[in-house]
Image (cartoon, rainbow, N blue to C red; front, top):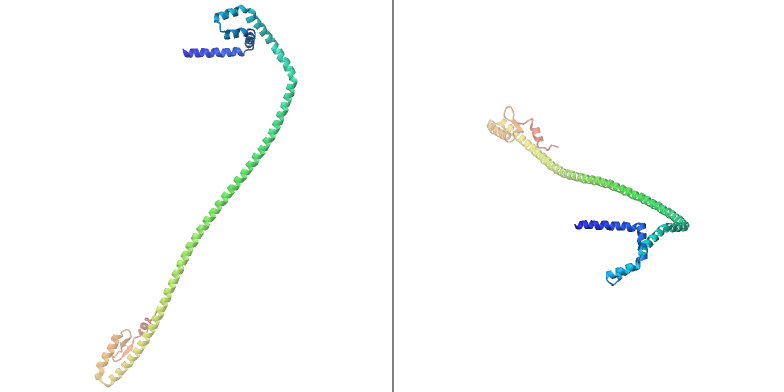
Length: 274
């Protein structure tokens, strides 16, 4: 129910606004209020009872006040207002044309100024864009150069690591060579000492061989003078052969001892080999 009255009030309000906006209706309302403004004010502001006020107003008003006069005035205004408006437009046409021309000239100047500003702004944006592209290109070049330098630095670092590793290997090889050289020198010293000792042993053995040979010869000579000494000589010869089996052997008769053919090779075995 409330929604129905709300819609009805909204429709009445909209229709009233449309009628007031109408030129005929609006002009008639204006003319009617012009003829009856005093009656409206009396009706609104009078402190008398409403019946007395209405009787007083009806006695003073007639049809010319609230209908004929407003209608005639409305018709007159509706006829004259367009003519007056046309006269006003004709009177204002010159100034309006000059104003329009001035306005057009001002617009043209503004458009030219705006075009120059837009052109300058476009040039500025183009220069800014070119500068931005140059900066971006320079940044890309710097990035590429940094990447190249980084790769070169990495390669140099790998080469340096390889050089350090090779230096370590060379140093280790040098240390090993030094140790081997020291070992060879010690071995050489030992070999020299061994050679000297072997030469001394050979010399002593040769002396002993000569002594033993001399003693054997003496025993042989003594054996020739007596058979009684035969057994003693044989025993001594056997003792010598037993003591040095690699150097001596008895002759075919068993009387003398002789040096073995391989005695020389046996003595050479004591010498160090190079």
